[in-house]
Length: 138
Image (tube, rainbow, N blue to C red; front, side, top):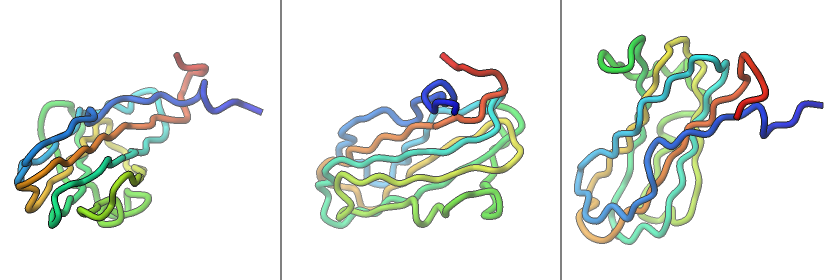
């Protein structure tokens, strides 16, 4: 039986932060390069969301290169939905996941708030790369 720890690579996408008074400013994640891995999922975690009417929309984009030409991922290339990965002010200390099964090398996760104009929006996200072409991974 192969262990999981030596077959996964975790990369930061959106660093944990309080994110005070975001308004509608998107949290644009780090570009993730899937080269050398056959699977990719994103994990999103919230802290105590203190803005009483904020909502947060999730968007996953893909590209053949790491600097431009990002387009929205087709629903058929997702495991789960962006809508289900989204959250609102009542989703304190919760997690969401979104899987990618497309064929592009690069992806980028963006979380866009609406009405996050008071209080804090503590949000973090990671990329979970799996099924490495060469294992174990560091």
